[in-house]
Length: 96
Length: 96
Image 1 (cartoon, each protein chain N blue to C red):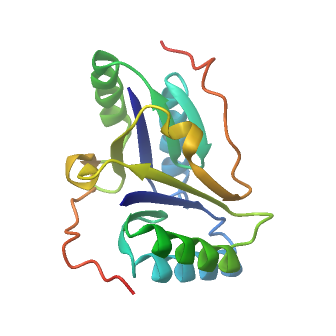
Image 2 (image 1 turned 120 degrees about the vertical axis):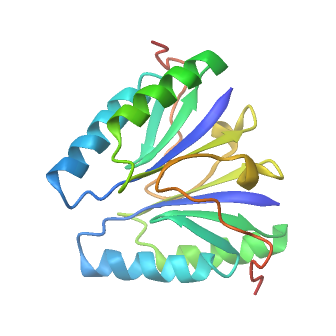
């Protein structure tokens, strides 16, 4: 399945920047970081449960916000982009 | 239709913060700001074209990045949220 994970974290603090790095590293095992805190994820249901479990251990539940949207298959190829946004190839997405 | 607009802008500069505010104000006429730079949009195809035109006049095309994903009807009610993320009611979304 294809998902969009968006992560709102305060990057004005070292701790926030560190959490964003760790979430980014984790998500990049399942897909692509397409913006600072937006990730295009390709995974199975069990892998999603693992990802959610790991993400929940990283974020600060009182400060950070994670939203995970299910998007139709192929959405990553039909996304409309403006400015510096670029399409990113998903075929070599690492599934760990 | 339902869309997710994500906006990557550097908020370390006054100009970037100003652009984010203007994009947020614009998008809030079509839906909800659910995270600092993530907007849940409900609009028609013609309204989307107007929104895209207006957004393109605000952003810095060399620095900022906009991605617009089409999501299935009802996605905003099935989004999975963690941390401080909250569901937001869309029924009174203003369509300008």
